[in-house]
Image 1 (cartoon, one colour):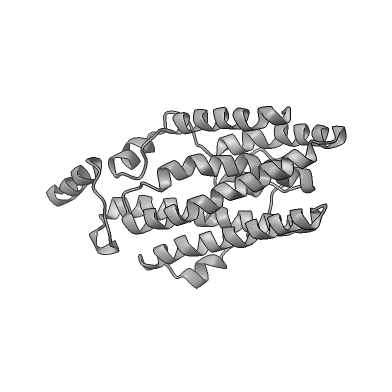
Image 2: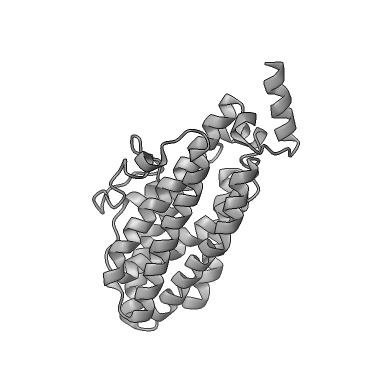
Length: 250
């Protein structure tokens, strides 16, 4: 116990770990949960955007959707490689779910994870048409950007480095979405569709930040796996969404 506490004190003071052999059991469990959530979400996002490619109204939009589909799968693979260092069977892991599976549109999952599937709940909902896909990408892309401020400085150094490599491409996904949304709202019909999709997706993307006052946050902070609580990240996202959508009249 004294050795474990020493490691916890080291992490709480900003220390980092560099290899699976250095990692205490409780820390390992939280780290694996974090990585599983990211990998499952990226695989589900990739599968969802793959289906949206044929919704695209033009070649520019098809290229953007294809790029997001490819890069999210690549990001999942990079983090899954880190999980492989902890003994995860990476080939079996990536085929354990139907990543394109979705719940009915009217379902309300809140922040609930489904059994054995660690994707954020937002990735269980179906996309309906191009405008819907663009709006979802904007909202969740901005949310991912906020989450990256945590992930790029977590205390497991090999994973933090992967997230630092991923972060600029994830930011570009959000920018592609905003570019697409600007084209969508250039017509009254498109703007009306965008407002309807915003009403649907905004609470579902917000749920991905988790509950306020999370009991697990103290543990994650002690391990250097989190630095800001859920409610602070959510507030940052809400401010950013308002800032980026206001110039579009949304």
